[in-house]
Every structure is written in C-alpha cells, then in structure tokens.
Length: 334
Ligand SMILES: [Fe+2]
Image (cartoon, rainbow, N blue to C red; front, side, top):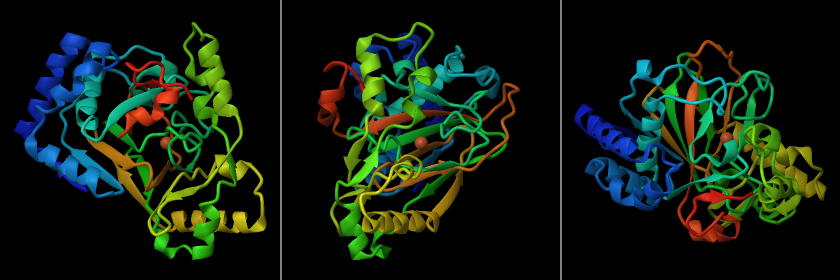
C-alpha cells in the first residue's frame, strides 16, 4: 500500500508536531505518551482511513510519502545514537509517532539504545560488518524484528530522514501456500532454538552511565536460549518469527525440522522486494507477515549518512505486561 500526502496535509502534520515538540520536547515525555492518541486524531482524515485499512487487512507493508523535512535544519547525521540531535530530528519523531499510534502502541526495549522510544538507524564506525541495524558493509540477513521475544512488535515503522545513496530496505512476504504441508507442520512445532543477537547487547545499547541490576538481568535474559515455533497462528495462513541469523546459529532437533526451515528460507529468498525510502517517507512493516533485511552499502561518515528512525508497535500492549517497566510505561525489559 502507498499513501501520498498532499502538501497542505503534510504541512498540517508538521505544524501539529512542531506545537507538540515545543510543548513536550521529546516523545519520551510521559505526559505526551499519555495524550498521544488524542493528538493523533488531528491528522488528515484520508491518511487515517488508509492506516485503518492497512491495519485491518494484513497488508505486508504501507509506505507514506511526503512528510516535510528540512535537511539543513536536520544538521549532521549523528555518528552514534548516543550523540545529541537537532530539534528537526526531534520534530520528525513526533510526526512519526502520531502516525504510528494509529496502528497500535509504540514501544521500545530497555535493552536497546538505552530505552529511547525512537531508535536511530545510522551507520556507526567499528560496527560495519555486524548483523546490526547500525552496520553497513554487511548483508543484513532476513529477519523478523526481535524474533526471539514473545512480546516483539507486530509492526515496525521506519521514517527516512536521509538516504542520499538510495540504499534499499529489503522486504519479503512469502506466500505460505507454497510451503509443503509437512513443512508447515514442522515449523509450527516449538522446536527451534533461538536467542537474541547483538541487537540487545549491553555494550552497544547502554549509555556511559551503565545500568542497574534489572537492566543487566534483561540483557542476560535476552541471551538465554529458548525453543519456539517459527510459524504460528492458522496453518492455512500462518504468521512467522524467522531470523536467518539467530536460528541458523543453533543446531536443529531433527532432519525434518531443518528441512522445513531450509524450505521456508528458500521461499523467503524468492519473494524479496527492494524498497527505497526517501526523506519524508515512512515505511510501516508487518512484523508477523514479513521479514526484512538490507544489502551492504558504503558508509560515508561525512555527516550525510543514511539515517532512519525506527519505532516498534504492538496493537495489544497489555499482553506484554510481564515485561513492562511499569503499567504507565512503554518500555519493555527483554
Ligand atoms: Fe530489523
């Protein structure tokens, strides 16, 4: 699905967001969190209708085009998520959040980027070859966001602030009807080992101050090995929690389990689409229906690097109660 904002509507979203940014400073402000749904109803009606259709019909992804971003005011792409950012970057977070909240509850992990609601995806020196969103020269393998965790987002949303080299986001929405019924049966058994990858590593995600026992326990929990089903829901129309990096690292319980896994991986490879986002685009991805990845690219490190802001979204946040920092927080412990 694609929705193109006209100039008047786009400028209205920017105006509403500017007012909110001046009042609340960041989307992490608890007073904004409590009122965000109310503010979001000021968005253009046609956009809200499209978001409603997207959310209720299990589309693999939706692209919204035309949000106004001032590249000059954005200043330099930070060298790391730990660095400060411009007022313009904070304003983008508000535009993004107001749209995302129509799909569900935006949330974040305490174990990612020190618990900021909006995570920065930008290339960071020293991490070029990792399986991380902040990498660049590696081929980011097909994955569902946070496949290891039961409270992972049903959606992830990427807002493009900068992408001069037109680096695509890869999305694959495999047609599960092409899988053999025996493979579907295998993949629906809770028999596949997984643990969090470095996306929840304490060294890349804590600030200089470090963390308390609770957060250190969450890092440890993320690393613990668990056994899950890769497909779930209806056998006729299964959802998936595949991550080719993390599941592929562990051994399989049987030849049948491995063969089914390989069949799904092959199907994913043949269903790929490349989507190039431009500044002002928002790409909302169904994290139950699709896997995503990214081809390698050359980082610039000149202040003009590719820069996306990521939000995770859950439609029923109460199901994540066991992991929430508090009942009044959108922060989850892994
Ligand atoms: Fe990802």
